[in-house]
Length: 421
Image (cartoon, rainbow, N blue to C red; front, side):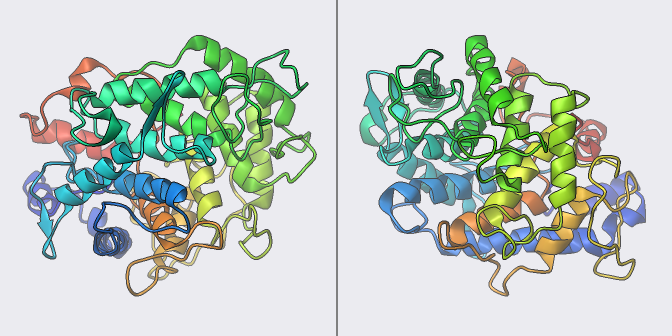
């Protein structure tokens, strides 16, 4: 398994005399799947920069996911291949323009309130988890917004304003409604009038995990306040409930629970983390039609949630100590494993399923709540093994001008690097 890389990679790797096993068919299939998915997304972008969903507010979600999918594809130097303003023309489409138009759509649909920046009033906590990562992953803190109500703001200021809004919307302890504290409801308002649930909470947490990528730190108090919610919402079987530990326990929300545990600094060896992993292992082969709200394989929402949680907790080179209840491994193509660092594991199971279930046009199917653009953006990021940020502020060197001189050895080391917990 490799991170996504540019068309220059084969020549560079040949010069470096890398092992031939890294060029095996499975890697080529993964890269082709991602290329086809990005081409489909580029072709289906609307004139206003958005991707269509079933309502205007949720168009922010599909647009944020699509922009993040383009931004997350990197070459071996860690340089962004598809970044706003870059002239990268593929099949007659400038992917740099695709990203720029998508970001402008998000900025045009932002608003400023006394508590910060938001991107819609309908389920805005969800939308934070789509818009903020797309802006933060630009890795361009000094970029300036030139359209919409945030004109003149820097990208970093936009993300800071969104984080302020998220922090303000966390359910406080001792709230007058008697709700369990620490999570988020659908709206990020002062004295939040919407009880928390763990389907919603994973999205502000996603925003908080990505915000440090553009230099916006997360208040320690927010992390500390999240801990009671984590303790409350986890069922004794290790899974996450919806708005109580006993109601609608499923895989999707358990992936979100692992993300929350990572944000607050819980260790993979903690019993609560191990219990969540054990639950996911037990439910691993559950499909979309087994549980249309949270089943695993074939459910893009659940797979993206679980991917984020497992990448943060175990990494993509994990063995089968925690997640071993995998689909049977077929040693024949297209199921052959060409990664020298590990055999069949949770990531390979995911990638194999997605490569073999992609539509001929490059898309993946959605479902009644979220349609093709979201499914395609999420699934492309899973196949390309995008790294999920850990919520720590990176060193300033991470924001150097793209394309700086980096040695080939260092670049290859980045490419080979696997994310550990």
